[in-house]
Image 1 (tube, rainbow, N blue to C red):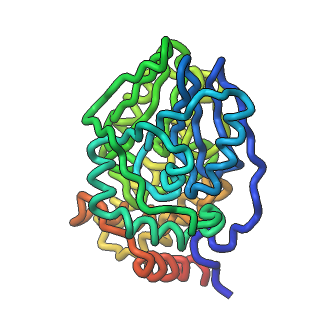
Image 2: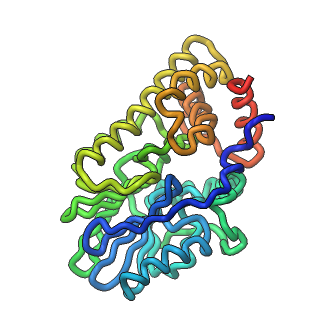
Length: 320
């Protein structure tokens, strides 16, 4: 019997942690599920990535209410993927922030992405019927903006393309705490189906140059030392370099996508196969690498139909 598609078989609930990183700064993590960040200012609360549905967001709100009664006025989209942002309505924020490129992605492929991800991660879309529609930002920025929550300074920055073309990080310069979104992962396989592998390393250089002392990755536990932060950045970079370099070499040697996938899987599995969602991500990742090394500098739109056809065809070559 073949493997079940993507994360369809992942039905076990994860242990949630709500950890304090500094006064008024928290990380909501769940054993490799998508993370949410919380920043409490003098007058309001900011949430970075909202969870996938309003029903799931209610658990974040419950934990916020255990530590503050201040209104949740701000939501930041670290990028556009449905699993990150479709819970936004539960917070009833005044402002939803996104980069210009993220806004463009919602216009271009928002509904297709929702349908695609819903099929890949059923557990992460608990009560999908509670989603009122796509999440649209009302504040769109080009490169950087600063929000003052009373005396607390928060910088929202698009440092470059990587996981998507619109990735945004949230930086607390005084506390040296970074919320990286999926630009950086820790113990979790980077999903690169919408990525720019040629540019991502340069963006990671800019992240490292901030010299974060604490970091909330897109997936994985919150990191609380500068050494852990660098380890996560370097681990993400190592995975990307090995994968994309190998795919480019395979394609240059005339190998088709299936053969390239089998070769790349064999290379990466011993070192990274234990990372969360490795089996889920790798078919999407290698397909995007193969496209980018060829005729598609920009990612093609994933649909539920394309997902299934591609994923099962590639898994078949490593399951024989």
